[in-house]
Structures are given as structure tokens and as C-alpha cells.
Length: 396
Image (cartoon, rainbow, N blue to C red; front, side):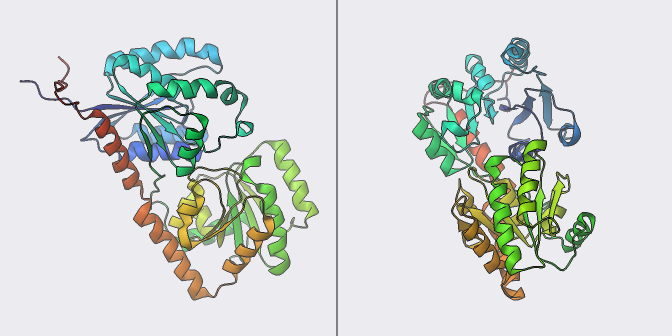
């Protein structure tokens, strides 16, 4: 008698990169139980530069993870090359579950014909078509229709679920699995924080408020800078850091705004870094000024490092910080500054208690192991045999 084979899970992502969603995919792949699933990561585009190269190498070193790249060229015509490669992978490995992560649903739907359970992972939050790029605006109505062919939609935020249901999502099952954070990697490390401050040229004994994220309009850098000017007026020794990269012209416009606010000598544009735990540990306070988010990675990572956060009330940011931080309306630089000042002015014992509470909240509720176990449970529920169905057997 043949033994039942291990379920095969395909996780599909546009490309490995430095974004929060890509990091979440990598954490999920690392922590899925290799005894429960045969795990395959399928990259649609080919990315082998900078940190993406390091991510690929790290995953490639995992013996239980199989990596594939479809090497899709940009544009719709690229599907003519990538789709046959993908179909060949389906025939070769016969996946039981196809999880399209962050837009991978376009190719994941092809798995329906292969008899796999199709899961659409949805990371964005806003149903406002004005926040979408041209491609998403054009195809969003079609994706809502095609969602009826999926078996499950997994969101990383309640806000995302509500948003897509308002857009007309037709997936028969919907589930929210919040982001998970590696609390071993992201942990309090005062010495690493002091070293990072020295590298940035920032004194070790001054308050440092940071905004971490891509420098794009939705992240609210202009709001952050105006709030920084208000904080500096009250705490002259305070410094501020913007961690992340962006388009040259947009960064130049923000630098001009900072100069007009008198922030040149205390504002540090430190660019992107692959030493994020040290960057978080350098901060006294993290500010999230975004106009739209899902479950923001930077908040969970900072909290795991014991850094309190002031966040805008977008996505599930408020649910993430709970009572360990402060929540303000998007675009309200006065409230952002006021709440930041309140936390910065607290006595050392109160700051230490808040830092410990922030980390404890992430460890207890948003660990990466919980992300992996909840995802595994969702997959296994989809694969549970229907009443009276014959069990799937191993390959012949």
C-alpha cells in the first residue's frame, strides 16, 4: 500500500526584495514546518541585486526549501515566456496549494487547472482607486471577478479584508493572519544602537525620532518633517532620521521642505540599510506617518526592539501598538508632535516600562512562529478531504 505523500505548497511572489512584504514571505518560508509541507518558493521576476541576492542565498541554503525563478521580462508580453515555465513547474511538482503572495494571484489562478487549492494573499489596504497604480486600476474589477476562482483569501490586516470586501471580493473564504516578527533577530541591543548612532554621526545621548520606510508620498514624510519641526521647538537637542530610499526628485523636494523648517542640522537622511535591528535600536521613538498601511512591519520590528511608537490610525497599526504607543489621525502633524513629545518627556522608568511592554506585546501576539502555524492550519483546512472522498496517494 502506498503512503500518502507530503502536501506540496507553492508560494509565489513577484520578486525577492527589500520591502516589508518580501521580508514577511521570507520569514514564512523559513518557518513553515518541513515535516508538514514540501515548500517551494516561486519568484516571477528575477532579482539578484543587493539585498535581494542575499535573501535568495539565505533561502537557497535551507535544505527543505526549493527555489524557482520564472525570469519573467517586464510587461504583459513577458507572460508568454513565464507562463509556460510555470506550467512546467506545475506538471513536475503537482502542488496541492498555490499561495499567490502580493499579486501572485495572476499566476496562482493557473493552478486551478492543475487541481490545486488556490490562495490569494492580499497585502494592500485601500479600496480607493486613486491610490492604485495604472495596472491595478485597470485590472482591479477583473481581479474581483477572478477571485471567485480562488479557494481562500488571506489578508494581513482587518482593514484590508474590509476594503477588499467593499471592492467586491468573491473568494468563498476570507482569513486574517497578521504579520509575524522574528523576535530573536529584532531584539533590544543598546550597544548596536549606540554604534549605529556613531555611524550616522548622531550623539548618543540625544532623543532620536525616526521614520522608517520607502520615501514615497503614502509614507507621510512631509507630515513627519512638520511634526519634527514642532518637536525641535520644544526639545532643541532632538534629532530625526529618515531611514529608506526614494526617487531623487521626491527626496529633493522633502529636503527643501526640511530646510524651510530649519531642520538641516538635526535631520539625517541615512538611506536604506541591511542592518535594521541596529537602526531600530538607535531610535528613541519610531513615528509612522503613513496615509495607508496594512499591518506595518516597521512598527512590529521596532516594538520587538523595545522602541515605542507613535502611529497614524491606518490599517491595523493601532491594533499592533495597542496601549504601548500612541495613535493619531493621518496628516495631523500637530497631534503627531504632541504625542511624540509626551513619550519623549516621560521619566526613565516609565520609558523602560513602555519599551518592555512593546516587546512583550509582539512576542506574545505577533511572533513569526504564530504566522507560520496559522498559515499551515489554513492550508491543511483547505486540504482536508471532503466527506466520502478518497485520499490522495503518493506519486506512482
